[in-house]
Length: 85
Image (tube, rainbow, N blue to C red):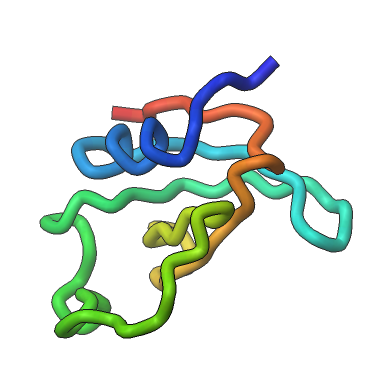
């Protein structure tokens, strides 16, 4: 049973690349290679300024290294998290 919470996942991704498997809203499973490590996120994709939007605590926003863009997933739908390097 998967035991990491949102804070644990974000902390891990700040320093690492991880393979995360989760169930999408349509029920299909997806494996994503992602990170929050700033030096791995291209300059044009780096968030600018601060968002005034209320942060959704059920969701983790990550940078998808395969699709080269921001993606998100529900913490409750994560099957596993594996660091890749």
